Length: 425
Image 1 (cartoon, helix red, strand yellow):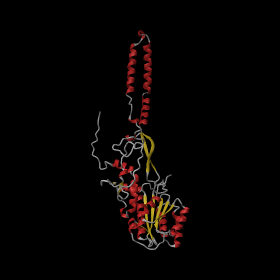
Image 2 (cartoon, helix red, strand yellow):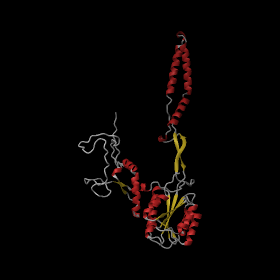
Image 3 (cartoon, one colour):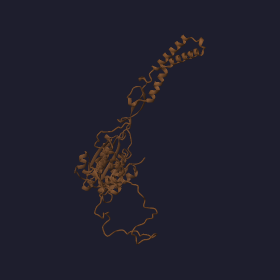
Image 4 (cartoon, helix red, strand yellow):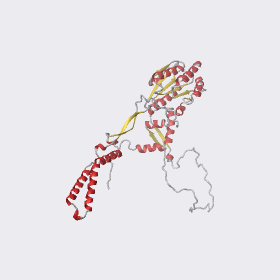
């Protein structure tokens, strides 16, 4: 018996398997902790890990024990109050103390909850679990850069890892049959002639001819043995060819209202919403372009830094941002090659005449080209004029246009999950 001992040093992640098992087991507790943590964090503190507390009663291992149910008989020493058959009253709750609802120990000792630290990647994984871009389709087959390997037949040359054993053995068997066919026919004739001589009486047998046949038969058998069982010409390999596949390129146009009616609290909520969207896209998709547009009376395309941290403000004309988004899409992102998404955050305040213009741009220009449009209105009061105008758009495009209201910072993450939740086919 042989024993193999692995003496390789353990790596840094030697407990990675146990950690993943732990994450799967307490997924519900961790998800609730992540949901609560993201509602309390600031913009700059969104990507760090998290400390997750799990009650000790939930981490106990299952054990086998005797059940307390069923009929039992026993003798209790020193019993003077009860007799056999008496019913014992249920103990009353409470006690000598009048404290709260906690589980205080009478001897002053206890056990805290189990605290588990999530890494940044684990936190982000739980944060965006079950989310996706709605209506994402694959298009642009002609200019696709992605390819996938598919079976392209059997070839005579290739790498050993792609060796097709069955086809190779079949080719070798056919070659051996072809190379030994004439030899086997000659061997069969010689054996038949030898058997005919052996069938004659002993006095009539030609010993010289019989010896010659035996020699010929032996030579023919040696020739058959020299035919190689497997030759290089017999080897066959699986051929893989690369087939272009449709790409899933997408662009997300982020539109944020920075007018004077947007208070600092409103802007902070809008920035946190777009930051969640930015982290979600950057983490889950490789080919997603981001376009940032800030607007007040006029719209302007900006970079990531200016979009989140610029302090520019002014009046409110929402249609200027929609016009700029339409021009950018038309110039840089053809709908036949790109999946187009738009997300807008505003307090709903807009010039009265401009709301109708926004509806026209949405219904005639943007929504026919886009896959999904998400509008978030940040206001603790009743809906503004823009919301009422957008309701007509939602009635015409119920699958492509979604509207949600955010009242406070705690509503950001639930609204975000509702807008981008994964749909079943």
